Image 1: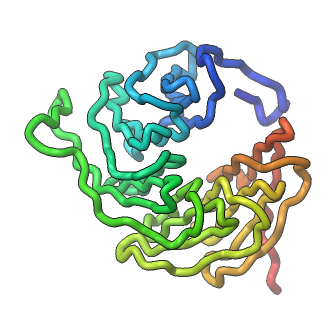
Image 2: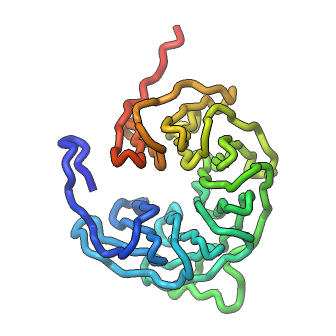
Length: 275
């Protein structure tokens, strides 16, 4: 954890026995979830930096974690080809979602929390309807907790990342085929394909207004795309190895990019003057 003002490390959390591949803060910022190649997920109390619990159940490396918008559910995607949903309050597994034919790379909740998207090496994206959790103990013995809404196909190689637009109407996906695709969530129709990267697209993120998409690639760059026109706006160059993660602050408009070159770079997103 880092202090952005001083650029100093605030704390290091230790506990996983293998590489940590995904991290996510709960919506209220009080809990941090971490996923690891050691097949586990850990929940951490941000204020005290203490481990809350370890979630066990996946049979292979866990590559992605995502909180539901209300912070009550944690979704995890694993190379065991499954997604698991967990009750954040109890640490109990709610259910296992199976359907992909190959390893899972990424999961993401829609802003409304009713949909979950998953990306896989099987070249597909799946959209799942997540049932509302009811009852104090969140039991699902008498009904399934999910249903498959649709499968999105079009990428030529493994799909590595998924992200919903802030209004939940568009789904962005990045792939080993070097492209980003934008999909209409309600219909499952392909809107357009963004071409520009020369290597795999491993992470995508929308700005808070939903007008711009950021993409991180193994070609060592981060690209900014205008959603309304499907045009490339700008390329951020500076990393000397693959860029593996990208995020943008909803408040400060800072862009953070993480790379295999062992650095994190912060970029300021500036509004262009079109006058």
